[in-house]
Image (cartoon, rainbow, N blue to C red; front, top):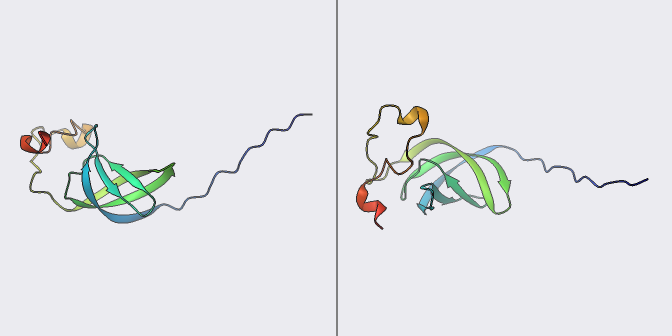
Length: 102
């Protein structure tokens, strides 16, 4: 009889920490270093600090959820659309055009 090995899933405790965004990735997500690895955080701009919740680790990438922005970037704009918080909107809509050119 054949027996297949099934590794047990690693247990992971959800925790939160404060991170500082270093740059943006190609999809407009903020890139920040956490204690678990690199995180890509939707809605975070460079030079912003935010409290995030670490949901899990996949290789060298960390799955996170943005809880709140602690320190805002001067490049942040007020969203043009009232529904941007509900639908997510364009991830690049919240920053000044000059930042997009860099």
